[in-house]
Image (tube, rainbow, N blue to C red):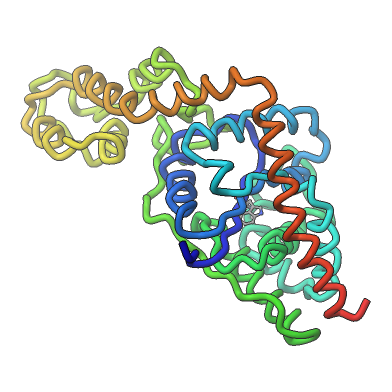
Length: 326
Ligand code: TRP
């Protein structure tokens, strides 16, 4: 089948993934596998930009993350699944692109300014961290990606990639396409406490969680404080359980009506939600367990991905050097 284009996307290996990754990102990645030629990358060099002093978990986190990818349906027969640091060309292209990227573009990047304000427990006033988007541009241009599936938070990086590509093409010769974003239309799943779902907030439901763990997490969710008895009229708008129903329950609207009319209590409501989450996550967790039992599976997949990614990346890198006349 004729493919619609070429995709590259990546995630930093920060450990086990949660249901927000699944709904927002991975579902999308899985769907794109049939229509595009896809490269999915473990961005371990990017992880170094903030975790340079704490590298002990990177290998384990990579294993866990790739298991989650497989469990969600990423298929090494369809997509190239590889590790960024295995392909030295990413570092080489990053170096070349760093020469043509004006500092102003990087200092002005909204994600840079935000992280500097937010991250207080590590020192990220480094050359590497400032250059985060340049490395990301190298990842994307390395495969001449036409499309990049990302969350909204990554749009500034994609815009920078396009600008860097344009500048390269203008200075040396047209070799890079300007990649377009593919935004997932799934809204963000909140955490179990209503804030953004994040492992560091301890409010995430992980893909590897057992039914008992999921039941416990749902039971701990806050509900409408004005609904104390089953018969009290509920206010689903502000209720976290209801926010989850919208993602996981086909009968969310009925439940909403019953809650408002005081015909269902929060305990029953949570039971219903737990059942619906498990319906979606149990097959994922079971597949994950199967994959985890196969010793060496992830290493084999990454070794195969390394070969496939290198085939393409080494050709593009040669073309880059020739175009620059190095
Ligand atoms: N910066 C991305 C994130 O934090 C991860 C990433 C690295 C990426 N390289 C990429 C995403 C290339 C898309 C394309 O989510």
